[in-house]
Image 1 (cartoon, rainbow over the protein chains, first blue to last red):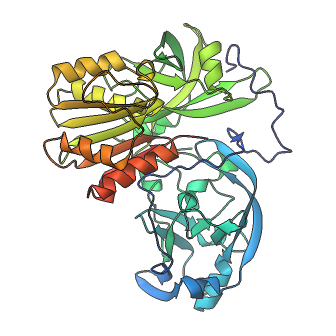
Image 2 (image 1 turned 180 degrees about the vertical axis):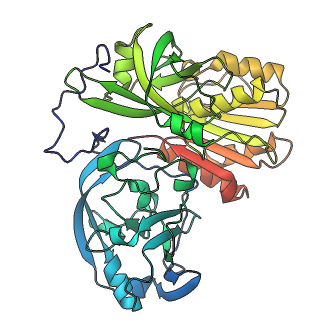
Image 3 (image 1 turned 45 degrees about the vertical axis):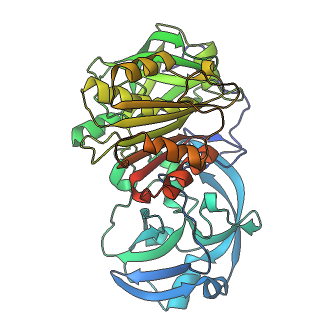
Length: 201
Length: 248
């Protein structure tokens, strides 16, 4: 349905097919969070990989920073319809985390947990093969608290609610268990190119 | 529930029935739904505009109206100077126009139907919109849960729904209104003549009969951080605080 009188910004803003349907480009970096912004001191921070309820390995801040650090530049897409291109991140790829824990594919699904009680689910296949990391830096600087610092998940090929801020654990689950937003009306998988915003998209 | 969630995901046509200039920067738009739905205060709709060349722009807008069975939802949209969709609504949209939308959407920032205790609403500018839906739903359903609103605006003219809020405050002893006016002197004794800070949040909490059990904060990220830090410092449990931050 054409909207009377609407022409769009007319910036020809498609950027060679990098903007998924229904998204628009932003230059700033909006902050969207469901609750208060947690304040997590790196001296108290740790990160756990669990298989079911059992911890398989726990790292403290210095141990985690000693893991191989990888830099990536990615486009990111928020379900609220903004997209940001060429964002620069540095952190530990999920395959490097699993290798350090001596794990391969305990199960096919992961439930990601955060310090503020947030959670989100991602299939393991979407976390491997250079697709995802636990990011410790953004644009060359320690990750700001507003953007999930000290550490957040980065899964840039899915809507950005999957890139959990203030991440504290990856938990392998036998089934695909819905996380915080997935239980509150948002899509179980969240592919921006298929506009999987809400449960029934 | 499943059926309603399926309907919420479907795009539908609405018709602009009324446009009101609410403040210098905010207009409200009453949209008559082709497929009426019942929302919960705090939910939003996604609005989709389509250009003749097929280009689409989508934005989420909170619903300002309560669920009242009218088949009309009211949005209150601030004109962002660099925006793409809000200038269309302000400068182009007219009564009778068709607007595509879907909803109701969102399952977190929701008015509590069985409130465990007083409700504390904190908003800035157009961040009042989902909170206003809550205040209106509370009133439409004759609920008596003690509720406080702390609303920040630059001047008295920038206070969205000012007359309605003051009328509710006058009429309902269970509703406490506190304004933070940042760029001029406020006229009411209970209002504040400064930007929000932790002390202000704590003072408004004391205007409620008991510690709030539900806190809703909506505004810019910086505003929300100050408000939530103030609420946490006052001893409120982080799990009781829900936030919505705009921008993007």
